[in-house]
View 1: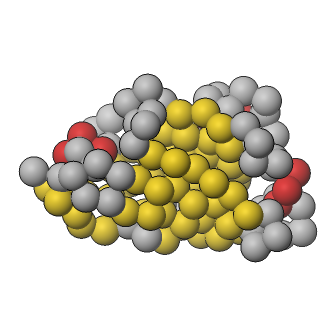
View 2: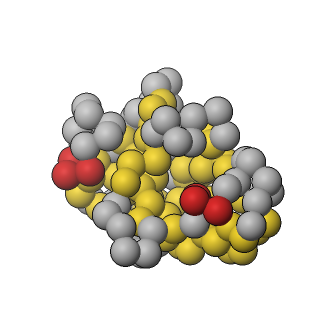
View 3: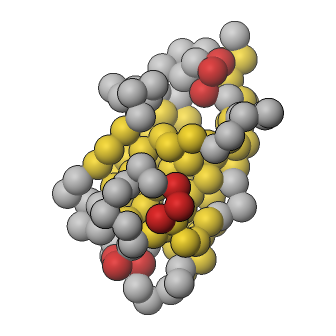
Length: 123
């Protein structure tokens, strides 16, 4: 399995931008699809975005489509989530996760999770 560490969270005003980074360790990073999942206070975890092993395929939740962009660099073992036009409803803990399922939206398919990074968007 891979180990994942997120960074880049923080406090931003509505309309602003943040870039989250997910750094992986382990030799088999390129074997895994990688997703970003978030959890707001008092709510269940929800899918945000995911990227295939090669980076050639991506998927986004409807709520972030057109505002967020996911990208990966297998050589550097990094996955970034660029978040633009942030809204207060984007406030949550954001988790990076790695898995092997072909269904990028299936949270149960992710086998390794980072510790999460807090994103707070003020109105």
